[in-house]
Image (cartoon, rainbow, N blue to C red; front, side):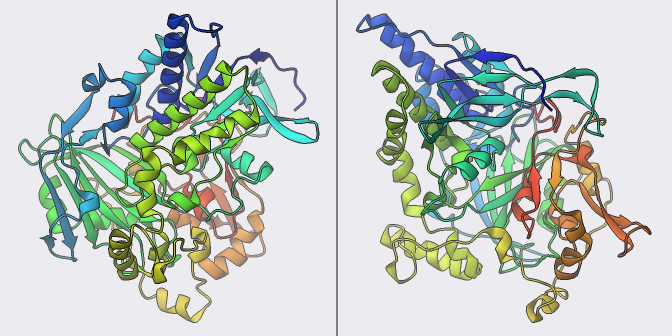
Length: 566
């Protein structure tokens, strides 16, 4: 659509108002303030902006994490204790679960969390954002960045900014009476902190060789609910991690329970998005987890209040894309900054954002933003405690491709060898998660048909179907807008995919977005129906689709879940 667009010139644009971007913007502002106060050299005056696709800060920040406060202490040494943490971890447990029992075991060293904090990520972002704004930085909600602006400079490509999404386009793709074209925001450097499987980061990976020589990124899906439970059931800051049931021995993942203030509890499960059985349904696995006698004991008499789902980058050190290029830096989950063994990423996201800020600051002091100066970001990451933390776990997830026993054996080897893999290899090769799915037409696939657990019926009290959970995620979208889940070839969905995988999109999506429905006009008698208004923005479809024909793009500004009250 060739519409005339407004152009806004900025110095630095941060995409996403998560921990990486907010920490980066805040740290850069502090560095510039300190520099100007010293009066050494030319004063720096720059304009910065943070773009957030959600309707408000925290609305797309899925609640519930155990946070290492290390980055907070560095970023806000005088005020970090004012952050709205739910509770300090003083009591923790590790359970190995069978179908009927949960056996307490010694806590593996990577899962020891004493001294860390249970937190609502949404509350933390709501606390951080005003402090960023006090630095004179605009934080704009309902402004999804949908396109990277790239120009050719001397035969090379350079990022010059981003384009925000158009508003007021109807379901048919035609402008409505309230149509407003998006804005082109030009910047000297764009900092991408979009979260996992970021839209703009994905565009950059297609234009620049960011993944050359790296392992493919692999993901897991985290599904969780917040419950209000009777008083005394769990303490604020109390943490439980589980392994075993309900997941089978080939599927990476586990459960977690986090105690919050006011007798609230976060209950969730992580399922690796490299599972092999196409009939597996992560949402059903979550219901099976809650249906365990030990979980029933915790939740009965309580009330479920919020639901959410989110992808998690699990690939580790060797799966991180190159995080810099001419005109851009990538931080947080978009850059794979997550400790996959400890399942912690908030502090790493913040630190990566802070290092991005230091890279930009030093470039500005040296005379301006250049590709060569932005390249120093990678060296800063390698010299920081980010590498110290992620390097020993560099082969952790890749070993689980051979099953959970092999993965745990590798984890033990890694603790002894400093992270080396099988045969003392420094690096184990990884494979994209969607390639691990077994075709049901194969002999192994035929066996898997017998292994898929039955879908537990919802009772509306402990167990909820997907639509019931979507309602409790606060998800809303403008109904009359183009579908933001782009399927390149829907014919595949009712032919090859139906035959080979039995249409797994109906199961791997935790929000009932994809349905195969009857359609007498099609030769197969079926068609794909996309219920885009249900989407909770977890990105699972973009990741797990076995043919890689689904592309998730941001919907019209503000659409999606609302986790801000979680």
